Image (tube, rainbow, N blue to C red; front, side):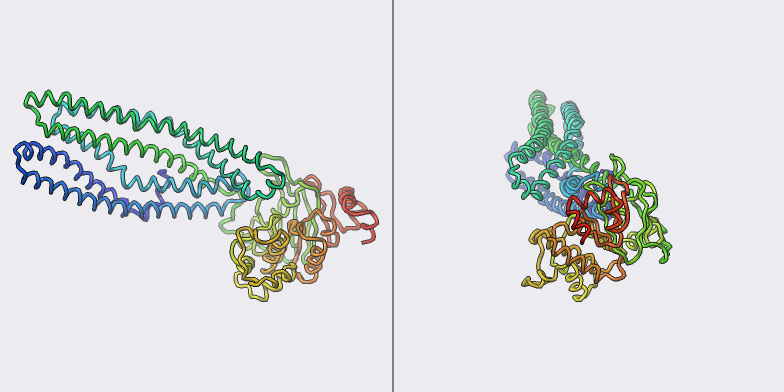
Length: 577
Protein backbone atom coordinates (compact mmCIF):
# COMPACT_ATOMS: atom_id res chain seq x y z
CA UNK A 1 0.00 0.00 0.00
CA UNK A 2 2.92 2.33 0.70
CA UNK A 3 3.68 2.45 -3.03
CA UNK A 4 0.23 3.92 -3.71
CA UNK A 5 0.79 6.89 -1.39
CA UNK A 6 1.44 9.11 -4.43
CA UNK A 7 -2.30 9.21 -5.02
CA UNK A 8 -2.77 10.90 -1.64
CA UNK A 9 -0.52 13.90 -2.33
CA UNK A 10 -3.52 16.15 -3.06
CA UNK A 11 -5.10 15.28 0.29
CA UNK A 12 -2.31 16.27 2.68
CA UNK A 13 -4.62 18.68 4.51
CA UNK A 14 -7.19 15.95 5.18
CA UNK A 15 -4.44 13.53 6.19
CA UNK A 16 -3.26 16.04 8.82
CA UNK A 17 -6.56 17.48 10.04
CA UNK A 18 -8.41 14.14 10.24
CA UNK A 19 -6.01 12.32 12.61
CA UNK A 20 -5.48 15.47 14.71
CA UNK A 21 -9.24 15.83 15.26
CA UNK A 22 -9.52 12.14 16.12
CA UNK A 23 -6.59 12.51 18.51
CA UNK A 24 -8.29 15.41 20.30
CA UNK A 25 -11.46 13.32 20.58
CA UNK A 26 -9.39 10.51 22.12
CA UNK A 27 -7.85 12.93 24.64
CA UNK A 28 -11.34 14.00 25.73
CA UNK A 29 -12.33 10.35 26.02
CA UNK A 30 -9.35 9.62 28.29
CA UNK A 31 -10.51 12.30 30.74
CA UNK A 32 -13.97 10.76 31.12
CA UNK A 33 -12.93 7.96 33.57
CA UNK A 34 -11.09 10.51 35.76
CA UNK A 35 -14.19 12.71 35.90
CA UNK A 36 -16.29 9.62 36.68
CA UNK A 37 -13.94 8.74 39.54
CA UNK A 38 -14.14 12.31 40.81
CA UNK A 39 -17.96 12.25 40.74
CA UNK A 40 -18.02 8.98 42.73
CA UNK A 41 -15.36 9.94 45.28
CA UNK A 42 -16.39 13.57 45.85
CA UNK A 43 -19.97 13.92 44.66
CA UNK A 44 -21.72 10.62 45.33
CA UNK A 45 -19.79 9.85 48.55
CA UNK A 46 -20.56 13.31 49.98
CA UNK A 47 -24.10 13.34 48.54
CA UNK A 48 -23.23 16.63 46.79
CA UNK A 49 -25.74 16.86 43.90
CA UNK A 50 -24.41 20.20 42.70
CA UNK A 51 -20.95 18.71 42.33
CA UNK A 52 -22.38 15.72 40.45
CA UNK A 53 -24.29 17.99 38.06
CA UNK A 54 -21.29 20.24 37.56
CA UNK A 55 -18.96 17.36 36.68
CA UNK A 56 -21.72 15.71 34.67
CA UNK A 57 -22.09 18.89 32.65
CA UNK A 58 -18.34 18.82 32.00
CA UNK A 59 -18.66 15.24 30.70
CA UNK A 60 -21.48 16.31 28.37
CA UNK A 61 -19.35 19.21 27.10
CA UNK A 62 -16.38 16.94 26.45
CA UNK A 63 -18.70 14.50 24.64
CA UNK A 64 -20.16 17.26 22.44
CA UNK A 65 -16.70 18.61 21.58
CA UNK A 66 -15.51 15.09 20.84
CA UNK A 67 -18.48 14.56 18.50
CA UNK A 68 -17.66 17.77 16.65
CA UNK A 69 -14.02 16.79 16.15
CA UNK A 70 -15.13 13.27 15.11
CA UNK A 71 -17.42 14.71 12.42
CA UNK A 72 -14.60 16.85 11.03
CA UNK A 73 -12.40 13.75 10.94
CA UNK A 74 -15.14 11.75 9.24
CA UNK A 75 -15.52 14.38 6.51
CA UNK A 76 -11.76 14.53 5.99
CA UNK A 77 -11.61 10.74 5.74
CA UNK A 78 -14.44 10.67 3.21
CA UNK A 79 -12.84 13.35 1.00
CA UNK A 80 -9.41 11.70 1.09
CA UNK A 81 -10.56 8.09 0.64
CA UNK A 82 -13.02 8.78 -2.17
CA UNK A 83 -10.55 11.08 -3.90
CA UNK A 84 -7.80 8.48 -3.52
CA UNK A 85 -10.02 5.74 -4.97
CA UNK A 86 -11.02 7.94 -7.90
CA UNK A 87 -7.40 8.80 -8.71
CA UNK A 88 -6.22 5.19 -8.44
CA UNK A 89 -9.10 3.98 -10.60
CA UNK A 90 -8.43 6.63 -13.26
CA UNK A 91 -4.69 5.93 -13.25
CA UNK A 92 -5.25 2.18 -13.45
CA UNK A 93 -7.70 2.59 -16.32
CA UNK A 94 -5.22 4.82 -18.19
CA UNK A 95 -2.42 2.32 -17.60
CA UNK A 96 -4.54 -0.59 -18.79
CA UNK A 97 -5.15 1.32 -22.01
CA UNK A 98 -1.39 1.52 -22.58
CA UNK A 99 -0.97 -2.25 -22.36
CA UNK A 100 -0.65 -4.23 -25.55
CA UNK A 101 -2.82 -7.18 -26.46
CA UNK A 102 -0.27 -9.61 -25.01
CA UNK A 103 -0.56 -8.21 -21.48
CA UNK A 104 -4.34 -7.94 -21.66
CA UNK A 105 -4.53 -11.56 -22.79
CA UNK A 106 -2.28 -12.65 -19.93
CA UNK A 107 -4.05 -10.82 -17.08
CA UNK A 108 -7.57 -11.33 -18.42
CA UNK A 109 -10.59 -9.05 -18.55
CA UNK A 110 -12.43 -10.50 -15.49
CA UNK A 111 -9.35 -10.05 -13.31
CA UNK A 112 -8.88 -6.46 -14.47
CA UNK A 113 -12.52 -5.66 -13.72
CA UNK A 114 -12.19 -7.14 -10.21
CA UNK A 115 -9.07 -5.07 -9.59
CA UNK A 116 -10.75 -1.91 -10.88
CA UNK A 117 -13.76 -2.39 -8.60
CA UNK A 118 -13.43 -4.71 -5.61
CA UNK A 119 -9.71 -4.19 -4.94
CA UNK A 120 -9.82 -0.40 -5.19
CA UNK A 121 -12.93 -0.30 -2.96
CA UNK A 122 -10.94 -2.14 -0.30
CA UNK A 123 -8.10 0.34 -0.65
CA UNK A 124 -10.56 3.22 -0.22
CA UNK A 125 -11.83 1.67 3.00
CA UNK A 126 -8.25 1.26 4.23
CA UNK A 127 -7.51 4.96 3.60
CA UNK A 128 -10.65 6.00 5.47
CA UNK A 129 -9.71 3.79 8.42
CA UNK A 130 -6.14 5.09 8.28
CA UNK A 131 -7.39 8.62 8.92
CA UNK A 132 -10.15 7.76 11.37
CA UNK A 133 -8.77 4.99 13.54
CA UNK A 134 -5.13 4.11 12.96
CA UNK A 135 -3.88 6.89 15.25
CA UNK A 136 -6.87 6.96 17.62
CA UNK A 137 -6.88 3.28 18.58
CA UNK A 138 -3.16 2.96 19.52
CA UNK A 139 -3.31 6.36 21.27
CA UNK A 140 -6.25 5.18 23.39
CA UNK A 141 -4.35 2.03 24.34
CA UNK A 142 -1.18 3.92 25.24
CA UNK A 143 -3.11 6.76 26.87
CA UNK A 144 -5.17 4.36 28.97
CA UNK A 145 -2.00 2.59 30.10
CA UNK A 146 -0.41 5.90 31.12
CA UNK A 147 -3.55 7.06 32.93
CA UNK A 148 -3.72 3.72 34.74
CA UNK A 149 -0.11 4.17 35.84
CA UNK A 150 -0.93 7.60 37.26
CA UNK A 151 -3.72 6.06 39.34
CA UNK A 152 -1.84 2.97 40.59
CA UNK A 153 1.44 1.59 39.29
CA UNK A 154 0.84 -1.89 40.71
CA UNK A 155 -2.49 -2.47 38.96
CA UNK A 156 -1.12 -0.99 35.75
CA UNK A 157 0.96 -4.16 35.41
CA UNK A 158 -2.30 -5.98 34.66
CA UNK A 159 -2.91 -3.49 31.84
CA UNK A 160 0.53 -4.13 30.33
CA UNK A 161 0.08 -7.90 30.54
CA UNK A 162 -3.36 -7.73 28.90
CA UNK A 163 -2.12 -5.39 26.14
CA UNK A 164 0.83 -7.69 25.40
CA UNK A 165 -1.38 -10.80 25.18
CA UNK A 166 -3.87 -9.05 22.89
CA UNK A 167 -1.00 -7.85 20.67
CA UNK A 168 0.27 -11.44 20.38
CA UNK A 169 -3.22 -12.61 19.36
CA UNK A 170 -3.36 -9.90 16.68
CA UNK A 171 0.06 -10.88 15.35
CA UNK A 172 -0.91 -14.57 15.24
CA UNK A 173 -4.13 -13.93 13.32
CA UNK A 174 -2.60 -11.38 10.94
CA UNK A 175 0.35 -13.52 9.84
CA UNK A 176 -1.91 -16.49 9.10
CA UNK A 177 -4.78 -14.68 7.43
CA UNK A 178 -2.87 -12.73 4.74
CA UNK A 179 -2.42 -15.77 2.43
CA UNK A 180 -6.14 -16.54 2.69
CA UNK A 181 -7.13 -13.06 1.61
CA UNK A 182 -4.84 -13.31 -1.40
CA UNK A 183 -6.50 -16.61 -2.31
CA UNK A 184 -9.92 -14.99 -1.92
CA UNK A 185 -9.02 -12.35 -4.51
CA UNK A 186 -7.82 -15.00 -6.96
CA UNK A 187 -11.04 -16.95 -6.41
CA UNK A 188 -13.03 -13.77 -7.05
CA UNK A 189 -11.25 -13.46 -10.41
CA UNK A 190 -12.30 -17.01 -11.26
CA UNK A 191 -15.92 -16.40 -10.24
CA UNK A 192 -15.94 -13.17 -12.27
CA UNK A 193 -14.64 -15.04 -15.31
CA UNK A 194 -17.37 -17.68 -15.17
CA UNK A 195 -20.05 -15.06 -14.47
CA UNK A 196 -18.91 -13.01 -17.46
CA UNK A 197 -18.85 -16.07 -19.72
CA UNK A 198 -22.28 -17.13 -18.53
CA UNK A 199 -23.88 -13.73 -19.02
CA UNK A 200 -22.28 -12.99 -22.40
CA UNK A 201 -22.76 -16.54 -23.71
CA UNK A 202 -26.13 -17.22 -22.15
CA UNK A 203 -27.84 -17.93 -25.49
CA UNK A 204 -25.21 -20.50 -26.45
CA UNK A 205 -25.49 -22.18 -23.05
CA UNK A 206 -29.27 -22.43 -23.42
CA UNK A 207 -28.99 -23.63 -27.03
CA UNK A 208 -26.83 -26.55 -25.92
CA UNK A 209 -28.90 -27.11 -22.75
CA UNK A 210 -25.73 -26.68 -20.69
CA UNK A 211 -27.33 -24.77 -17.83
CA UNK A 212 -26.78 -27.55 -15.32
CA UNK A 213 -23.14 -28.03 -16.35
CA UNK A 214 -22.48 -24.31 -16.18
CA UNK A 215 -24.22 -24.06 -12.83
CA UNK A 216 -22.08 -26.93 -11.55
CA UNK A 217 -18.91 -25.21 -12.78
CA UNK A 218 -19.97 -21.95 -11.13
CA UNK A 219 -20.91 -23.77 -7.94
CA UNK A 220 -17.47 -25.43 -7.83
CA UNK A 221 -15.60 -22.11 -8.13
CA UNK A 222 -18.02 -20.36 -5.81
CA UNK A 223 -17.62 -23.14 -3.24
CA UNK A 224 -13.84 -22.75 -3.43
CA UNK A 225 -14.27 -19.03 -2.78
CA UNK A 226 -16.65 -19.73 0.11
CA UNK A 227 -14.34 -22.30 1.70
CA UNK A 228 -11.37 -19.93 1.53
CA UNK A 229 -13.48 -17.09 2.92
CA UNK A 230 -14.72 -19.34 5.75
CA UNK A 231 -11.16 -20.34 6.68
CA UNK A 232 -10.14 -16.67 6.72
CA UNK A 233 -13.31 -15.85 8.67
CA UNK A 234 -12.55 -18.50 11.27
CA UNK A 235 -9.18 -16.94 11.92
CA UNK A 236 -10.66 -13.45 12.05
CA UNK A 237 -13.43 -14.73 14.32
CA UNK A 238 -10.81 -15.62 16.93
CA UNK A 239 -9.93 -11.96 17.40
CA UNK A 240 -13.00 -10.69 19.25
CA UNK A 241 -13.53 -13.61 21.67
CA UNK A 242 -9.84 -13.90 22.55
CA UNK A 243 -9.46 -10.17 23.12
CA UNK A 244 -12.69 -10.15 25.17
CA UNK A 245 -11.49 -13.07 27.32
CA UNK A 246 -8.14 -11.40 27.97
CA UNK A 247 -9.74 -8.01 28.70
CA UNK A 248 -12.42 -9.46 30.96
CA UNK A 249 -9.80 -11.48 32.83
CA UNK A 250 -7.84 -8.25 33.29
CA UNK A 251 -10.96 -6.49 34.62
CA UNK A 252 -11.54 -9.32 37.11
CA UNK A 253 -7.93 -8.96 38.22
CA UNK A 254 -8.34 -5.20 38.63
CA UNK A 255 -11.52 -5.59 40.70
CA UNK A 256 -10.03 -8.42 42.78
CA UNK A 257 -6.75 -6.78 43.66
CA UNK A 258 -8.30 -3.31 43.66
CA UNK A 259 -10.78 -4.33 46.34
CA UNK A 260 -7.83 -5.36 48.55
CA UNK A 261 -6.21 -1.97 48.02
CA UNK A 262 -9.51 -0.20 48.76
CA UNK A 263 -9.76 -2.14 52.03
CA UNK A 264 -6.21 -1.09 52.82
CA UNK A 265 -7.06 2.55 52.10
CA UNK A 266 -4.51 3.03 49.27
CA UNK A 267 -7.19 3.32 46.57
CA UNK A 268 -10.71 4.73 46.37
CA UNK A 269 -13.82 3.19 44.83
CA UNK A 270 -13.86 5.84 42.12
CA UNK A 271 -10.28 5.01 41.14
CA UNK A 272 -11.20 1.34 40.76
CA UNK A 273 -14.13 2.34 38.52
CA UNK A 274 -11.73 4.55 36.52
CA UNK A 275 -9.30 1.65 36.11
CA UNK A 276 -12.13 -0.63 34.92
CA UNK A 277 -13.18 2.07 32.44
CA UNK A 278 -9.63 2.37 31.16
CA UNK A 279 -9.48 -1.39 30.73
CA UNK A 280 -12.76 -1.24 28.81
CA UNK A 281 -11.29 1.51 26.62
CA UNK A 282 -8.26 -0.68 25.93
CA UNK A 283 -10.58 -3.59 25.10
CA UNK A 284 -12.65 -1.50 22.68
CA UNK A 285 -9.51 -0.01 21.13
CA UNK A 286 -8.02 -3.48 20.67
CA UNK A 287 -11.23 -4.68 19.02
CA UNK A 288 -10.90 -1.73 16.64
CA UNK A 289 -7.27 -2.70 16.05
CA UNK A 290 -8.32 -6.30 15.35
CA UNK A 291 -10.83 -5.07 12.76
CA UNK A 292 -8.15 -2.79 11.30
CA UNK A 293 -5.91 -5.82 10.97
CA UNK A 294 -8.54 -7.53 8.82
CA UNK A 295 -9.15 -4.37 6.76
CA UNK A 296 -5.46 -3.70 6.15
CA UNK A 297 -4.74 -7.36 5.47
CA UNK A 298 -7.41 -7.28 2.76
CA UNK A 299 -6.08 -3.95 1.51
CA UNK A 300 -2.53 -5.29 1.41
CA UNK A 301 -3.60 -8.17 -0.82
CA UNK A 302 -5.60 -5.77 -3.01
CA UNK A 303 -2.72 -3.28 -3.21
CA UNK A 304 -0.41 -6.06 -4.40
CA UNK A 305 -2.86 -6.92 -7.19
CA UNK A 306 -3.28 -3.28 -8.22
CA UNK A 307 0.50 -2.73 -8.17
CA UNK A 308 0.92 -5.84 -10.28
CA UNK A 309 -1.05 -4.13 -13.05
CA UNK A 310 0.90 -0.88 -12.62
CA UNK A 311 4.14 -2.89 -12.77
CA UNK A 312 3.09 -4.59 -15.99
CA UNK A 313 4.87 -2.84 -18.82
CA UNK A 314 3.51 -2.95 -22.37
CA UNK A 315 5.54 -5.12 -24.70
CA UNK A 316 4.57 -2.85 -27.61
CA UNK A 317 5.82 0.65 -26.87
CA UNK A 318 6.10 3.90 -28.74
CA UNK A 319 9.58 5.37 -29.20
CA UNK A 320 10.02 8.69 -27.37
CA UNK A 321 11.23 10.37 -30.56
CA UNK A 322 9.14 8.25 -32.93
CA UNK A 323 9.38 9.53 -36.47
CA UNK A 324 8.54 7.46 -39.52
CA UNK A 325 10.35 8.42 -42.70
CA UNK A 326 7.75 7.48 -45.30
CA UNK A 327 8.44 6.64 -48.92
CA UNK A 328 5.36 6.97 -51.11
CA UNK A 329 7.15 5.05 -53.88
CA UNK A 330 7.50 2.02 -51.62
CA UNK A 331 4.78 -0.63 -51.33
CA UNK A 332 1.86 0.30 -49.10
CA UNK A 333 2.53 -2.73 -46.83
CA UNK A 334 5.54 -5.01 -46.72
CA UNK A 335 6.35 -8.04 -44.58
CA UNK A 336 10.01 -9.09 -44.50
CA UNK A 337 10.76 -12.51 -43.04
CA UNK A 338 8.19 -12.03 -40.28
CA UNK A 339 7.71 -14.62 -37.57
CA UNK A 340 5.50 -14.30 -34.51
CA UNK A 341 4.46 -16.43 -31.57
CA UNK A 342 2.07 -15.82 -28.68
CA UNK A 343 3.43 -16.10 -25.16
CA UNK A 344 3.61 -19.71 -24.04
CA UNK A 345 2.96 -21.15 -27.50
CA UNK A 346 4.82 -21.90 -30.68
CA UNK A 347 5.08 -19.74 -33.76
CA UNK A 348 1.75 -18.55 -35.12
CA UNK A 349 3.53 -17.10 -38.18
CA UNK A 350 6.75 -18.37 -39.72
CA UNK A 351 8.98 -16.45 -42.11
CA UNK A 352 6.25 -14.48 -43.92
CA UNK A 353 7.32 -12.16 -46.75
CA UNK A 354 5.07 -10.29 -49.20
CA UNK A 355 4.19 -6.79 -50.41
CA UNK A 356 0.86 -5.04 -50.95
CA UNK A 357 0.66 -2.27 -53.54
CA UNK A 358 -1.35 0.90 -53.03
CA UNK A 359 -4.98 1.11 -54.07
CA UNK A 360 -5.32 -2.65 -54.39
CA UNK A 361 -7.57 -5.23 -52.77
CA UNK A 362 -5.82 -8.17 -51.14
CA UNK A 363 -7.58 -11.26 -49.84
CA UNK A 364 -6.14 -13.42 -47.06
CA UNK A 365 -7.50 -16.94 -46.77
CA UNK A 366 -6.59 -20.09 -44.92
CA UNK A 367 -7.93 -22.69 -42.55
CA UNK A 368 -8.85 -22.10 -38.93
CA UNK A 369 -5.74 -21.27 -36.91
CA UNK A 370 -3.62 -20.58 -39.97
CA UNK A 371 -2.62 -17.13 -38.65
CA UNK A 372 -4.83 -14.81 -40.71
CA UNK A 373 -5.94 -12.53 -37.86
CA UNK A 374 -2.49 -12.65 -36.30
CA UNK A 375 -0.96 -11.42 -39.54
CA UNK A 376 -3.22 -8.38 -39.92
CA UNK A 377 -2.85 -7.54 -36.20
CA UNK A 378 0.85 -6.91 -36.82
CA UNK A 379 0.09 -4.07 -39.25
CA UNK A 380 -1.38 -1.61 -36.67
CA UNK A 381 1.13 -2.95 -34.08
CA UNK A 382 -1.33 -4.65 -31.78
CA UNK A 383 1.59 -7.07 -31.43
CA UNK A 384 5.23 -6.78 -32.46
CA UNK A 385 6.82 -9.36 -34.72
CA UNK A 386 9.16 -11.77 -32.93
CA UNK A 387 11.42 -11.76 -35.96
CA UNK A 388 11.51 -9.75 -39.16
CA UNK A 389 10.01 -6.38 -39.99
CA UNK A 390 6.65 -4.92 -41.01
CA UNK A 391 6.61 -1.77 -43.14
CA UNK A 392 3.84 0.70 -43.93
CA UNK A 393 4.58 3.28 -46.62
CA UNK A 394 8.22 2.23 -46.59
CA UNK A 395 8.70 2.88 -42.85
CA UNK A 396 9.03 0.29 -40.10
CA UNK A 397 5.80 0.27 -38.06
CA UNK A 398 7.95 0.52 -34.90
CA UNK A 399 9.11 3.96 -36.02
CA UNK A 400 5.58 5.36 -36.18
CA UNK A 401 3.83 7.14 -33.32
CA UNK A 402 0.76 5.05 -32.47
CA UNK A 403 -1.67 7.81 -33.40
CA UNK A 404 0.00 8.34 -36.77
CA UNK A 405 0.13 4.64 -37.68
CA UNK A 406 -3.36 3.76 -36.53
CA UNK A 407 -4.74 6.94 -38.04
CA UNK A 408 -3.84 5.47 -41.44
CA UNK A 409 -5.65 2.21 -40.74
CA UNK A 410 -9.31 1.38 -40.39
CA UNK A 411 -9.72 -2.09 -38.90
CA UNK A 412 -12.88 -4.12 -38.51
CA UNK A 413 -12.23 -7.00 -36.06
CA UNK A 414 -13.75 -10.46 -36.19
CA UNK A 415 -16.04 -9.73 -33.27
CA UNK A 416 -18.34 -6.83 -34.07
CA UNK A 417 -18.02 -4.48 -31.11
CA UNK A 418 -20.36 -1.52 -30.80
CA UNK A 419 -20.71 0.73 -27.77
CA UNK A 420 -23.67 2.06 -25.86
CA UNK A 421 -24.90 5.31 -27.36
CA UNK A 422 -26.47 6.25 -30.68
CA UNK A 423 -25.47 4.86 -34.06
CA UNK A 424 -24.06 8.30 -34.88
CA UNK A 425 -21.94 8.26 -31.70
CA UNK A 426 -20.41 5.00 -32.87
CA UNK A 427 -19.79 6.35 -36.37
CA UNK A 428 -17.89 9.34 -34.97
CA UNK A 429 -15.25 6.95 -33.58
CA UNK A 430 -13.89 6.79 -37.12
CA UNK A 431 -13.78 10.59 -37.46
CA UNK A 432 -14.71 12.98 -34.66
CA UNK A 433 -15.82 15.78 -36.99
CA UNK A 434 -17.52 13.59 -39.58
CA UNK A 435 -20.44 15.24 -41.33
CA UNK A 436 -23.84 13.62 -41.87
CA UNK A 437 -22.84 13.15 -45.53
CA UNK A 438 -19.67 11.26 -44.49
CA UNK A 439 -21.71 8.98 -42.26
CA UNK A 440 -24.37 8.42 -44.92
CA UNK A 441 -21.72 7.51 -47.52
CA UNK A 442 -20.09 5.01 -45.13
CA UNK A 443 -23.48 3.48 -44.30
CA UNK A 444 -24.25 3.04 -48.00
CA UNK A 445 -20.91 1.39 -48.79
CA UNK A 446 -21.27 -0.97 -45.83
CA UNK A 447 -24.84 -1.87 -46.87
CA UNK A 448 -26.16 -0.43 -43.60
CA UNK A 449 -28.10 2.51 -45.00
CA UNK A 450 -31.17 0.50 -45.93
CA UNK A 451 -31.94 -0.78 -42.43
CA UNK A 452 -30.74 2.39 -40.65
CA UNK A 453 -32.97 4.62 -42.78
CA UNK A 454 -35.99 2.51 -41.80
CA UNK A 455 -35.41 3.05 -38.10
CA UNK A 456 -37.68 5.72 -36.56
CA UNK A 457 -34.66 7.43 -34.95
CA UNK A 458 -32.34 6.88 -37.97
CA UNK A 459 -28.73 7.34 -36.78
CA UNK A 460 -30.10 8.58 -33.46
CA UNK A 461 -31.14 5.07 -32.44
CA UNK A 462 -29.73 4.15 -29.04
CA UNK A 463 -27.64 0.98 -28.97
CA UNK A 464 -27.31 -1.20 -25.92
CA UNK A 465 -23.88 -2.30 -24.71
CA UNK A 466 -22.23 -4.29 -27.50
CA UNK A 467 -25.10 -3.42 -29.86
CA UNK A 468 -27.08 -6.38 -28.56
CA UNK A 469 -30.34 -4.83 -29.75
CA UNK A 470 -29.21 -5.38 -33.37
CA UNK A 471 -28.72 -8.57 -35.33
CA UNK A 472 -25.25 -9.99 -35.91
CA UNK A 473 -25.24 -8.92 -39.56
CA UNK A 474 -26.37 -5.40 -38.71
CA UNK A 475 -23.62 -5.07 -36.12
CA UNK A 476 -21.00 -6.22 -38.60
CA UNK A 477 -22.15 -3.75 -41.25
CA UNK A 478 -22.11 -0.87 -38.76
CA UNK A 479 -18.56 -1.71 -37.66
CA UNK A 480 -17.51 -1.64 -41.31
CA UNK A 481 -19.23 1.74 -41.70
CA UNK A 482 -17.45 3.04 -38.59
CA UNK A 483 -14.08 2.17 -40.14
CA UNK A 484 -15.05 3.74 -43.48
CA UNK A 485 -16.18 7.09 -42.03
CA UNK A 486 -12.57 8.19 -41.52
CA UNK A 487 -11.58 7.25 -45.10
CA UNK A 488 -8.45 5.38 -43.95
CA UNK A 489 -5.54 4.74 -46.30
CA UNK A 490 -5.64 1.06 -45.34
CA UNK A 491 -8.89 -0.80 -44.60
CA UNK A 492 -8.58 -4.19 -42.87
CA UNK A 493 -11.68 -6.39 -42.81
CA UNK A 494 -10.87 -9.29 -40.49
CA UNK A 495 -13.53 -11.85 -41.42
CA UNK A 496 -16.02 -9.05 -40.80
CA UNK A 497 -18.66 -10.28 -43.24
CA UNK A 498 -19.12 -13.75 -41.77
CA UNK A 499 -22.65 -12.95 -40.53
CA UNK A 500 -23.79 -11.51 -43.88
CA UNK A 501 -25.83 -13.42 -46.41
CA UNK A 502 -24.21 -14.03 -49.80
CA UNK A 503 -26.20 -11.31 -51.57
CA UNK A 504 -25.27 -8.65 -49.00
CA UNK A 505 -21.68 -9.88 -49.00
CA UNK A 506 -21.52 -9.53 -52.80
CA UNK A 507 -23.07 -6.05 -52.67
CA UNK A 508 -20.55 -5.03 -50.00
CA UNK A 509 -17.60 -6.24 -52.08
CA UNK A 510 -18.92 -4.42 -55.13
CA UNK A 511 -19.37 -1.17 -53.19
CA UNK A 512 -15.86 -1.47 -51.75
CA UNK A 513 -14.37 -1.88 -55.24
CA UNK A 514 -16.26 1.11 -56.60
CA UNK A 515 -16.21 3.53 -53.65
CA UNK A 516 -12.78 3.06 -52.07
CA UNK A 517 -10.55 4.68 -54.66
CA UNK A 518 -7.14 5.42 -53.21
CA UNK A 519 -7.70 2.94 -50.38
CA UNK A 520 -5.79 -0.29 -49.87
CA UNK A 521 -8.23 -2.99 -48.76
CA UNK A 522 -7.23 -6.21 -46.99
CA UNK A 523 -10.01 -8.76 -46.67
CA UNK A 524 -9.54 -11.71 -44.33
CA UNK A 525 -12.03 -14.50 -44.85
CA UNK A 526 -12.60 -18.22 -44.94
CA UNK A 527 -15.02 -17.79 -47.84
CA UNK A 528 -13.57 -18.21 -51.29
CA UNK A 529 -16.38 -16.06 -52.69
CA UNK A 530 -15.24 -13.13 -50.56
CA UNK A 531 -11.60 -13.08 -51.72
CA UNK A 532 -11.70 -14.60 -55.22
CA UNK A 533 -12.05 -11.24 -57.01
CA UNK A 534 -9.27 -9.56 -55.03
CA UNK A 535 -6.28 -8.25 -56.98
CA UNK A 536 -4.07 -10.67 -55.06
CA UNK A 537 -4.81 -13.48 -52.63
CA UNK A 538 -2.49 -14.57 -49.83
CA UNK A 539 -2.92 -18.18 -48.72
CA UNK A 540 -1.79 -19.22 -45.23
CA UNK A 541 -1.39 -22.74 -43.95
CA UNK A 542 -0.23 -23.49 -40.43
CA UNK A 543 1.28 -20.03 -40.07
CA UNK A 544 3.29 -20.32 -43.27
CA UNK A 545 2.82 -18.66 -46.64
CA UNK A 546 1.36 -21.36 -48.90
CA UNK A 547 0.82 -19.20 -51.97
CA UNK A 548 0.21 -15.73 -53.32
CA UNK A 549 -1.40 -14.67 -56.59
CA UNK A 550 -4.75 -14.28 -58.31
CA UNK A 551 -7.64 -16.71 -57.93
CA UNK A 552 -6.92 -18.55 -61.18
CA UNK A 553 -3.18 -18.72 -60.54
CA UNK A 554 -3.63 -20.13 -57.07
CA UNK A 555 -6.30 -22.61 -58.10
CA UNK A 556 -3.85 -24.04 -60.63
CA UNK A 557 -0.65 -23.87 -58.61
CA UNK A 558 -1.55 -23.88 -54.90
CA UNK A 559 -2.77 -27.18 -53.46
CA UNK A 560 -4.02 -25.58 -50.20
CA UNK A 561 -6.09 -22.98 -52.04
CA UNK A 562 -7.48 -25.58 -54.44
CA UNK A 563 -8.64 -27.73 -51.52
CA UNK A 564 -10.37 -24.72 -49.91
CA UNK A 565 -12.09 -23.86 -53.18
CA UNK A 566 -13.29 -27.39 -53.84
CA UNK A 567 -14.55 -27.70 -50.25
CA UNK A 568 -16.88 -24.72 -50.88
CA UNK A 569 -17.56 -24.78 -54.63
CA UNK A 570 -17.84 -27.32 -57.39
CA UNK A 571 -14.95 -27.51 -59.86
CA UNK A 572 -17.01 -26.05 -62.70
CA UNK A 573 -18.15 -23.15 -60.46
CA UNK A 574 -14.55 -22.32 -59.61
CA UNK A 575 -13.51 -22.30 -63.25
CA UNK A 576 -16.57 -20.60 -64.76
CA UNK A 577 -17.14 -17.80 -62.22
